[in-house]
Image 1 (tube, helix red, strand yellow):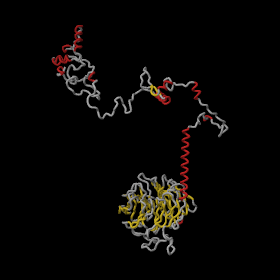
Image 2 (cartoon, rainbow, N blue to C red; image 1 turned 180 degrees about the vertical axis):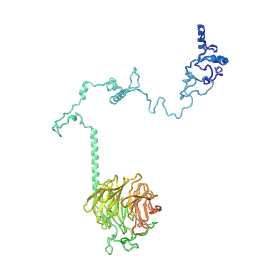
Image 3 (tube, rainbow, N blue to C red; image 1 turned 120 degrees about the horizontal axis):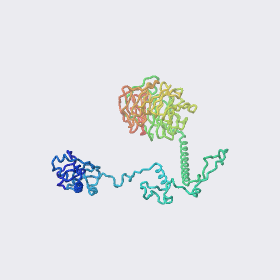
Image 4 (tube, one colour; image 1 turned 60 degrees about the vertical axis):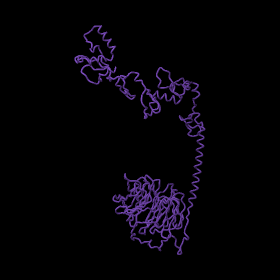
Length: 615
């Protein structure tokens, strides 16, 4: 056979004349029968030769050895099969002829060759362990079923636990998917053909209650109409009883916890203070409220005197320790700065001495949770404290007595006295319920509410000779208000703006600086227009996530800010360049303030519970 195939080429070669291949009709001697010949004997010979040489090998051989004139005279037959290679698949070659992934076969293969097992190594990347699976979870067959039939089969399976197998061919036995016992009891019927018997209908039929009297609205015999109940609807499930018992136990536990909290609040409302000094009065009968005169610095300057020139601090000269948790806010005594008030997360407010020994003078106890903010009045004789226990309390700085306690049920974020001397009985508080309340200490009630913000209010800053004030909130906006008028006169909201949890007024009262949560300080004018001064922008510090306060030196030459990593950064107010970075604490420097009558002294407070004095 290989000898016969040696001289033949592939059927892909184009020739003038007959096309080689198994589709050609072979004839004896390499010549095709003439259409004029109608002899029966010749036809029998042609049929016999065709049976002996079905693939036309002898004909092709004769055509190769014959003359070209014979090829030209040969007529092509109609091709009924595709072209294939003229190679012997049973030859001595061991080359792989086909693969399981092939879609087209170019060689005539025998059935035995096609059914041989796949030779070679197993594909290591084939993740299909079961060859009968066409999905990861099994074998999916495509079936033609309308939506109604599918819904009936699904309802039958859900209600009775069985359904007909949709893969079964018509005319064969119908296997059941699910419970065979339920299928046998229902006669292998679908839910659409199952009809209960008369006795079953009588047994399961519920008796409906009466419609009631149309003239009775409530109580026994009231009109129910189409909403009348069925008998058996009020049967109590034991599981429901267990759940009700658990609910009662939970309610009892909550009531007990609420009662304990109320008792704790009663104890917390027993405000008191502890004096830590040796004597409340000195030899002249003066308390610590008296501004000291034995210092090198004049702590009570006259009105209109120029502030001292500021220099950047370099070293720590004193550390106040006494708070068990982080310090949230510090305030210096107005004008003189000889006393320091600190609010801490340990629920305590402490008063410290600044210019003498640096001791703790008094501790104010009365809050049950962390103290958020404190604020002196203009004279320093009283101060407010705002706590997470939802209370705002007014204290006497000298005696330590709690004068008033106020709450509206919401957590205050910031408290601020009205700076006008004739309005020292009024304070404003920014609450977490998005409102700003104005409280009159004389009337002991809220006299005004500013309700325009869409988030908790963080800061309140009086501007324009205290006729207006500016507020910031978590809604990423700045709003300007006229005092005592709950209408927004200026609304600042830009797409690039972030929340501003700290705002400070410049000593010249012409600008106010806002600590933005995108690690920069923005400056706005305080003349009523509230325009942003885009030439003054201070960046280079990291405060994202912390409400670090901003500070100005007394002469307005420097602007400073705490950072989240414990540093204090100082910028030049004119050119906006960073002048110094001071490593002050190990944790967040949440607040700091410059001494009003010193050249370079600065007080810092941190979440590490320490308060430090720098010079």
